[in-house]
Length: 276
Image: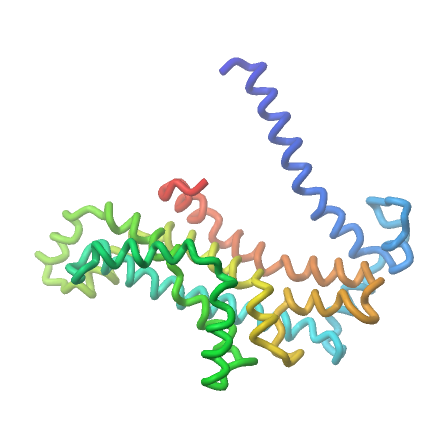
């Protein structure tokens, strides 16, 4: 590739990056404007009257109508708990299918993976009735358990464990380790990049989910941040763009922290799995 083509590709990449960053920059800019300037037809990327009132209002903790801190806690708690369950269950399921003599696994695996073709929203009514029968609606169990059976995670981990070197397992057997010890002490540490990749994808999916938390919860205290923002878009907050953008900016912080923590392993895991 000559320098001209390389320079052109860099310019195109920068232009695309700026295009994706514009909504984020507009969100941050609006979050520091007062309500009058936020709904003004004149576009100002830099606020004329810089204010932190939108953030202090959202984080004050004494707004009974807008319990932002409780919504953020719910989203983070549900995201972390759900991610831990998904990673643990999917890793065990994938290792069993890839490395152990599970009966009928050649037939079970395609059937299990074929569930990826079923739209998530189709399962809402059966899940709602099931959680209703067990009186689990409007609880953390209803917000966490539906995400546990993740066929994508099993497929992702299966691809890694299928190519796991036999020599490492045989070395473990020679040292007297049983299958459970080999899984915990040899296979899992080797799969750290894939586990981080699965964890970040899962946390983002649970944290950003809107429909199921909206269906499964009715109490304001059990809402997540995504459904809370939807509530703020109604009633007295319909014209409070500054407060909405401040809340949305706050909501992005946990996602960014999780990504920054696992960034190194995430990139390595995506490279190994071939996810584009």
